[in-house]
Image (cartoon, rainbow, N blue to C red; front, side, top):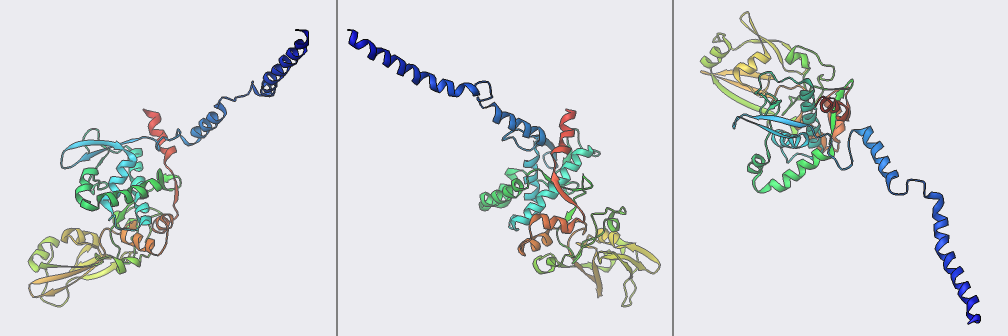
Length: 345
């Protein structure tokens, strides 16, 4: 019995050492945050800087859209709204970088609209319509009908363009710009004051040579009876070879003013009265008709969509496209600006 006692004692000592050594090694760290809180605090610190929490979409600010056909107000997340605008406003066949540029313009527009809180002329609860009064918007079901069998492919491409630019808006001096856009230029964009009377430093005429090569909308013709032409413009057309005289052109090479026997009309007025695609027009009389030729499609201010696609086809990225059509702008996160809205709620 005595012979086993030293062995038992040695066994107890060994067991004690085995148990105590790990505890001794861990002891210096037992007062630190070893339960995951250090990582969690880093994430919290990051979220305070960005206004986001982990895996949370960029500020869940809802957009209330007045649906012009159903007469209801549809409420949806901001980024979902942007997908619906890009799908409605730009062909999904366009290059991904052009779609990204369109996503930034659409997001900039709605952020600007939300910040301005201008709901004049809108039904209660709505911040925008789904028409050209603001931006054209189509929901998921409507896009399914438009895209048909190509829906999955096209909506995936548009969603990628929106997600790749998530939260990004176009600013000038830290404020969202008036992100106007149109289909096809006449080779140039237009100064804002030529159309709206008020200048915006970032909406200046720039060249857009890509449109002529790739847009089927670059040239168009419209035939109108002389009597209809006279009635719409409130002028009298003589039997001579000359029908009015262009006395000035805009910075964007569009018609500035036309004079008809002492009466002056702006290119914008003529475009609207005759329902022309562009204010860059010419015409000639053929018998009892007047044949009007236009170059470009749209008002001409801001980003040309076909021009954007032309730039993308040449390898330009979305930021290069945006900064070409909007002069002196920056691209930044919308989070800080949208924080002012969520703080009021």
